[in-house]
Every structure is written in structure tokens, then in C-alpha cells.
Length: 327
Image 1 (cartoon, one colour):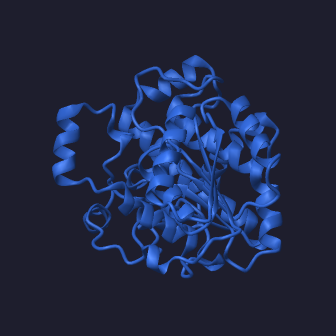
Image 2: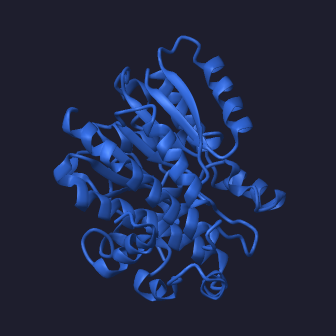
């Protein structure tokens, strides 16, 4: 479990130190924000748009995303940026490929890829189209596949861009620190067959969610190692405890209690995401690290199992999608 000091820092991060006034103008920059139709993703997209970026808002629901786009345009009427919708369903790998192809048909550059979309506590038995437990499939495998499909464009953009300006950001959680990777990685399903995924899910909803967010950290760490020489910065982060649709499956009473005690407006989390995406303090030498507040701090509970050791655990997450012929 996370240490008390770490938990308090992440639950009560204090006043943000990296806000709009600290962010550069982004005219001419291309960004993707997944899961940007609501909550944290919408706030991130709005700030990037306000700074002049061309923002691809990629999510499942066209209706909800276009409503979010309209809301953003109303809130920021003077922006020189663009908002573009492309459907993205991370729970179906075929649709992930279609979404990536749709983006690549429009753009030759990608400066910021913000992997924000995720699943928290879905109904028991939820699976991807290919049969994986839903949180593992969306938060890890689908996100990994989407990133890999875009990587050649990310790398080519980094080669002609200022140092440290091209980044891949992976939204994780403090839950990543709540599991012992050595203890729990053994139970990860080795395939997408029902028995393996049922057994995995039966270990408990919180543990399954935590492992999926630990996977996001491992992806960021491994991606950083693989693409540091390409000039691509890769970092993961905990955006904090946010009052968003993440809690929609938790019930009205639980949500009400959380709102009064631990939850913050999504915009506060957006500042942490955008610190990882834009702050000058985040450089290639910090690539692979985990930020839980705007200081680029590594979470000690998982550091030893990420980019600094336990390679076989990281390789599980990386290698699980080799059946897609992407590695």
C-alpha cells in the first residue's frame, strides 16, 4: 500500500503551480486527447484549444464529444485553435486501428498524445470485443495499440521539433501504488480466453483497476526507454481525486461523500496533465517518471518495478499485444 505521506500528498496536493499563465502558445501544434468528451479530458482539450492547438478530441460517443466541443468553443470564443472529432473505442482493437488510420489520413505531425481515456469500475463481466477484461483491455492493451500505431508520426515529429516538446502522456492513478507488482502480476491473464479473464477479474475490482493503472506506468516507463533516443518524452501521472464521470458506477451516496471529502474539480487534474505535457521542467532525462503533483516526483512505491527494474513485469504488459503484430 502507498505510504501515508505519499497518500496525503496525492490526495491534498495544494494550490496548483502550473496553470494557463505558465503554458506556452501552441499555434501550429497538433494534439490528441483521448476520452475528451467529459471531465478531465474535456478540461485538458479546452486549455490546449485556448492556447491555439489543433486538438483531436477522440472518444466513443460522437454526440457527447460534439456537445463538449460546442461547450468549449462557447467558453473560448477567441481561440485560434481547432477542435476535431474522431471516434475512438479502445475496447475494440479493430476500431482502435480505424481511429489511428483516420488521424494519420489527416495529419503528418503529432506533438502531444495524451492517453487519458480509461475505465474505472464497470459491471462485473465486462469484456473488450476481443475478450479481455475491460479495464486491462482499455486502460492497457487498447491504449498501447493506439500509441504504437501513432509512434512513427510521433517520432518523425520529434526529429524536426524543439527538444523536449514532443511528448506522450499516460494518465495513471495513485492506485498504481496500491499493489505489489511482484505479488499480483502472476495473476494477469495470459490470453483473452474467458476462463483466464474470469479468474483475473475475481481477484477484486480495486485490484484489477490498480493493476491496469500500474500498467499505464509501465507503458510510460518502457516507452521512454525505447524512444528516448528518438527525442520523445514519455511520462505518466496521477491527476488526483477528481469529481468526474469516473465515479458514475459507485452510487449516489458514495459519490456524495467523496465530493465532500476528497474530490476536486477536473480542472485541477488538467493542470497536472498539462504539467506533464508542457512544463519545461519535464525533459528527456525525466522521461519515464511518474508525476503526482506539478513537481515531477517519482512515486517511490512503484519506482523499483518500473523503468529501474523488474523488466519481466513490464514486458508482460508490452508483450501481451504481440498477437497484434505491433512489436
